[in-house]
Amino acid sequence: MLTQTTIRHDSIHPALKSARSVAPTSARVVIAGTEPLAETMRLMGAVMSHSRNSEIFGQSESADYLYKVMGGCVRTYKTLNDGRRQISGFYLPGEVFGLGYDDEHTVSAEAIADSKVLVITRSAVNALAGHDPAIARELFTVVARELRRAQDRVLLLIKSAQERVAGFLLEMADRMSANDAVELPMSRQDIADYLGLTIETVSRTLTALECSAVIELLTSRQIVLRNRAALSRMVG
Amino acid sequence: MLTQTTIRHDSIHPALKSARSVAPTSARVVIAGTEPLAETMRLMGAVMSHSRNSEIFGQSESADYLYKVMGGCVRTYKTLNDGRRQISGFYLPGEVFGLGYDDEHTVSAEAIADSKVLVITRSAVNALAGHDPAIARELFTVVARELRRAQDRVLLLIKSAQERVAGFLLEMADRMSANDAVELPMSRQDIADYLGLTIETVSRTLTALECSAVIELLTSRQIVLRNRAALSRMVG
DNA sequence: CGACCATTTGATATGGATCAAGCGATGTGG
DNA sequence: CCACATCGCTTGATCCATATCAAATGGTCG
Image (cartoon, rainbow over all chains, first blue to last red; front, top):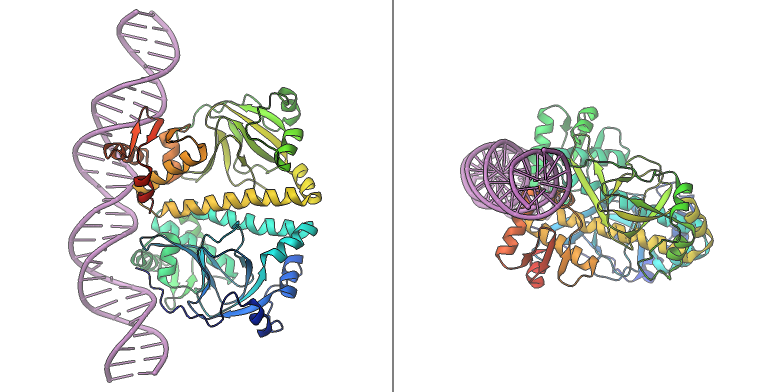
């Protein structure tokens, strides 16, 4: 059922020190980053490269680091003991992940495409937050956003397949701020595991949406939203 | 579909001042409450009484307050425009809700049973958090816990009906710290809307569990867990 | 070109929803 | 105190959306 394969660790994870030497200057800062947290991460963090499908951290590793996607795309997920996989979130450039877990991660994280990820120790961030209320507040905001997304997905999961897919497309278009033309970095299996559906249902739903001229499939990963209003109506 | 009826507001919500006069001393503090936040809420908050099914706040009201259940039980939920309802969470005595929303609530809150709720303005809490890192950290922890619960429910929602119900029973037993004997404060409809199932499916699943001697139904709301191991095995 | 992988498409099976009825507890008025 | 209405819950019969099983198609890379 799970199609994950090559877990190539081209940069060993806990080797923050060695990673630090790699690319502190090559940090291609994507978002403006004038907020205290972004600036702090840029100054104190190290950029690590992760090739497609490589693991960034594991489900029960201690949550010592905080991560920010600088390029590429990351998925976090949980695996049930029977093999089913639930993707908890996709993270696009500029987004922070690894937050909101007390002592240990409750999810694993992998690069979906070749990615650059900024890493900083949580202890450093916590120390800063203890001194600077602005940073504390910002961390709080990031977790609050994460919470809202989780709650939105709970809402999504009680809906029909069509509603879920429509909601997914709108969310992605929104987050990529790509006007109507969406380039999906993830596979159908990833989408299915995110929406709690099967690849077949996702595929069928997409073709159905194309038939009703709501979307257009240039390639399987390049989707054009032709009728946002109709999509919005679908999500309920 | 929705069985909510009598929205009796025996204490008008924004009237914090009048409510304050009601019962600041009747605050039957349930948990030890030596943490800074609990102490602050006790000192600065007001206790309001809400009768069964009365609204505590609405889906798009500004999120000016923070709440703590002192007695009874509260549900938060979202309603889709087609009438479907998703319960986002149940809150038992000692638990805090109303947190994790930026400017306005994204959920509504109602008392499931007659309840006492401690209320404090968010601005007061935020001000405190700005000065006292310990309080800021505690708020953070509360949101992080909320996040974890939301993520757990996402995981629950991709599972079978039996797994969902088993998970629900274990969660409730856990949170009520009532050894094996669980007294559910909520109706089958509430459970169904929480788990993304129908009342019929919830009911059938419970009877099936009883037939396999995993649980015992004293009354419809009093459930005894006869075989926790089996339940745990079911949740996957 | 050929192997491999992701995606689509088709046929069938099934878990849970829906529709419908019965049951038990609780409360209310006569 | 009892008849009866009401409400929450359970049980039964049927239907449908999505899963599952299976195969074809298409795109990519050596």
